Image (cartoon, rainbow, N blue to C red; front, side, top):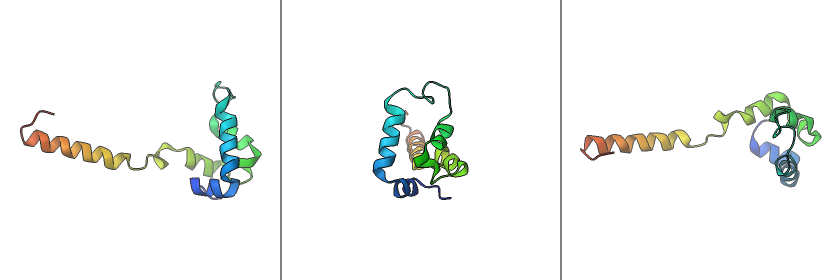
Length: 91
Protein backbone atom coordinates (compact mmCIF):
# COMPACT_ATOMS: atom_id res chain seq x y z
CA UNK A 1 0.00 0.00 0.00
CA UNK A 2 1.05 3.57 -0.61
CA UNK A 3 1.99 5.94 2.13
CA UNK A 4 2.32 9.61 1.22
CA UNK A 5 -0.06 12.43 2.14
CA UNK A 6 -0.73 12.98 -1.57
CA UNK A 7 -1.74 9.35 -1.93
CA UNK A 8 -4.15 9.69 0.98
CA UNK A 9 -5.78 12.74 -0.58
CA UNK A 10 -6.02 11.13 -4.01
CA UNK A 11 -7.35 7.80 -2.77
CA UNK A 12 -9.83 8.98 -0.20
CA UNK A 13 -10.58 12.33 -1.77
CA UNK A 14 -9.78 15.66 -0.18
CA UNK A 15 -13.36 16.11 0.97
CA UNK A 16 -13.45 12.72 2.67
CA UNK A 17 -10.12 13.32 4.41
CA UNK A 18 -11.27 16.78 5.50
CA UNK A 19 -14.57 15.40 6.82
CA UNK A 20 -12.83 12.57 8.63
CA UNK A 21 -10.36 14.92 10.31
CA UNK A 22 -13.16 17.33 11.26
CA UNK A 23 -15.09 14.45 12.78
CA UNK A 24 -12.05 13.19 14.65
CA UNK A 25 -10.73 16.49 15.92
CA UNK A 26 -13.83 18.67 15.97
CA UNK A 27 -15.30 16.83 18.94
CA UNK A 28 -13.72 14.81 21.73
CA UNK A 29 -13.05 11.35 20.43
CA UNK A 30 -11.39 8.19 21.69
CA UNK A 31 -7.93 9.47 20.70
CA UNK A 32 -8.40 12.85 22.36
CA UNK A 33 -9.79 11.22 25.48
CA UNK A 34 -6.82 8.86 25.63
CA UNK A 35 -8.87 5.76 25.01
CA UNK A 36 -7.32 4.84 21.65
CA UNK A 37 -4.15 5.79 19.78
CA UNK A 38 -4.67 7.90 16.65
CA UNK A 39 -3.24 5.10 14.51
CA UNK A 40 -5.90 2.68 15.72
CA UNK A 41 -8.68 5.21 15.30
CA UNK A 42 -7.59 5.86 11.72
CA UNK A 43 -7.49 2.13 11.02
CA UNK A 44 -11.02 1.86 12.46
CA UNK A 45 -12.24 4.41 9.90
CA UNK A 46 -13.34 2.47 6.79
CA UNK A 47 -12.50 5.44 4.57
CA UNK A 48 -8.86 5.19 5.64
CA UNK A 49 -8.44 1.46 6.20
CA UNK A 50 -9.73 0.74 2.71
CA UNK A 51 -6.66 2.47 1.28
CA UNK A 52 -3.90 2.36 3.88
CA UNK A 53 -2.59 -0.46 6.00
CA UNK A 54 -0.98 -0.14 9.45
CA UNK A 55 2.56 0.16 8.03
CA UNK A 56 1.57 2.99 5.67
CA UNK A 57 -0.18 4.87 8.46
CA UNK A 58 2.79 4.37 10.78
CA UNK A 59 5.02 5.97 8.12
CA UNK A 60 2.59 8.87 7.72
CA UNK A 61 2.38 9.45 11.47
CA UNK A 62 6.14 9.24 12.01
CA UNK A 63 7.31 12.79 12.88
CA UNK A 64 10.49 12.21 10.87
CA UNK A 65 8.34 12.06 7.72
CA UNK A 66 6.73 15.47 8.18
CA UNK A 67 9.43 17.66 9.67
CA UNK A 68 10.01 19.06 6.22
CA UNK A 69 12.73 21.66 6.16
CA UNK A 70 13.17 21.90 9.94
CA UNK A 71 16.70 20.49 9.76
CA UNK A 72 17.69 23.04 7.11
CA UNK A 73 16.31 25.91 9.19
CA UNK A 74 18.15 24.72 12.29
CA UNK A 75 21.37 24.46 10.30
CA UNK A 76 20.90 28.01 8.98
CA UNK A 77 20.28 29.43 12.45
CA UNK A 78 23.28 27.63 13.90
CA UNK A 79 25.45 28.74 10.98
CA UNK A 80 24.41 32.36 11.43
CA UNK A 81 24.98 32.17 15.20
CA UNK A 82 28.48 30.81 14.54
CA UNK A 83 29.19 33.65 12.08
CA UNK A 84 28.03 36.24 14.62
CA UNK A 85 30.05 34.66 17.41
CA UNK A 86 33.18 34.48 15.24
CA UNK A 87 32.77 38.15 14.29
CA UNK A 88 32.61 39.16 17.96
CA UNK A 89 28.91 40.00 17.90
CA UNK A 90 26.95 38.84 20.94
CA UNK A 91 24.45 36.13 20.15
